[in-house]
Length: 74
Image (cartoon, rainbow, N blue to C red; front, side, top):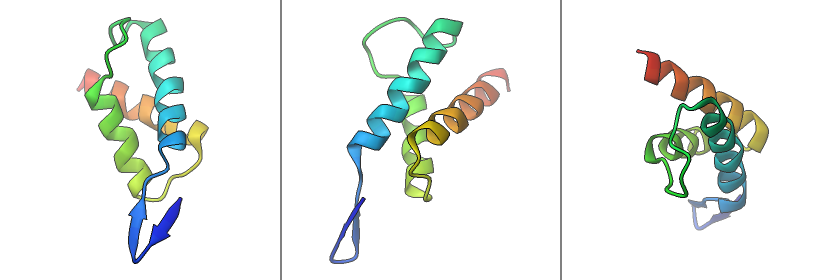
């Protein structure tokens, strides 16, 4: 992640990889549609976690899956 003049610049590679991992799993379980359209709820969860300091793509994906499933069941 880069910081320039006190502003955080998001690392799109980490977020993109985490989204791909989580979306692939959720598609296989049937939790989200099997399409090329980005699931905004899942992306929002990942971005929020990234902004709160989680930068490991696998940990981001796993936490996002857990939160997505919890929100879906609630």
